[in-house]
Amino acid sequence: MPFPRSSGILLHPTSFPSRFGIGDLGIQAYEFIDFLRESGQQFWQVLPLGPTGYGNSPYASYSAMAGNPLLISPEKLVELGMLSEEDFANLPVFQESKVDYDKVIPIKIELLKKACENFKDRATPLQQKEFAGFCDSKAYWLEDYALFMALKDSHNGTSWHTWDRELAKRQPEAIEQAQRQLSTEIFYYKFTQYEFFREWSQLKTYANMSGIQIIGDIPIYVAHDSADVWSHPHIFCLDEQTGEAALMAGVPPDYFSATGQLWGNPIYNWEGLKNQDFSWWIGRFEAMLDYLDVIRIDHFRGFEAYWAVKKGEQTAMNGEWIKAPGEELFETIKQRLGKLPVMAEDLGVITPEVEALRDKYEFPGMKILQFGFGSDAANPFLPFNYSPNCIVYTGTHDNDTTVNWFNTASEEERQNLLLFLGCQSPEGIHWDLIRLAMTCVANQAIIPLQDLLGLGGEARMNFPSKAEGNWEWCYQANALTKELSDRLQNLTKLCGRAPQPK
Image (cartoon, rainbow, N blue to C red):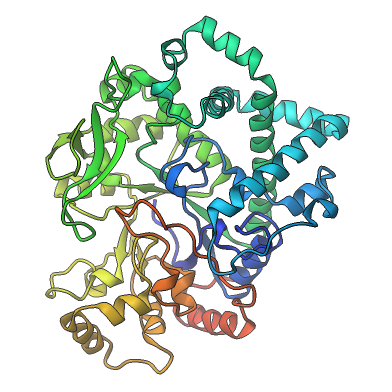
């Protein structure tokens, strides 16, 4: 659906400053929303919010429905009465500019487990009722997720397809026995989901009351080692003997990688999904809309045709395009849920068929300014080639920061950009591209916070195809100044993107 002319900021919650070593849903999140409101923004875009595994990627989650327990605020648990300030007495000193996951995770888990035990002992009748209500309302995914995570812990973190065959195949007797034996661990995972969604719901309510809508990501694929694949194997292309992905997802060689990107996620069994009237996908969209205002579909082109790579390949080069029933899927979702507030990540190899699918449902696509200056006037990422129903970004979480992109770009790109701009601003190239995004015809402009702060390559969020060292950047506690807010507000108003008086 088209959106009114507006703007916002891209920032994942892990990037908030925090004395616990990783951003969470506590006071800094509320102060960020205040910054958005005061600077005239109307959107906050986040990356997927699910629980992360190896590599800490939000795009490789243990569940398509669950929330990341690492985002739970220990200070909010103090307010709930499940932790005390004394529990934080021996916290180590964490780095301010990046998340040290190896250091953060065990400390955060220890605090969450203590809070869980205290919840069992101290929860008021009202809290117990709220917890029970949450578990009942989310049972369609929560039961599988909590058991999956408890089993994963009991198997030292190994992937589900390596477990005993009875558990890997979810035979009823083995499942019932595991539920009995792991009841304590299952309760812990249910508690962390209850607390995550309690905190997120409060934060989202505050954002909405402040005039801020939240854009969230829904990755097209789910991780092979996830509760979703383990509990719904029939809707994925798996090797029946080993449980491994028989067909793996990815993209062919592109801007980001000469050998393509081999993600390893299992491809969907679209025939199996169609036979169920796409019920799994409908449930996924319903779950996302419970805690997001707008959904950005990552790798949208995979709904028209997807790149499939056979098991055993080491790169994505030797794959093939296979047609997907995207139109049937979106038509079914529209009939069940109505017109969806959806954006389409339509980057990469985009064909007229992909554009037709996107445009049929009026999903705005994405334009990246950093992609606009390496070729000629036909480049679709040049602002004069945009249509209004799109979202313009200076860059995304997969791009370098604008400052470092410009410093390392080819001479042709730099000269083309400067010629297009007419001159370089004394405020820096990042403000030039922010201004270009804000003034263009695109209905929405989204700016990564790193670009607003004018940071270099050290603040990059993700290097596609790099397995480790991503998703670590945090901003400094004093970064969101009034001067920055005022400057952004003035530009936002001048460009007609500020909220209209009611």
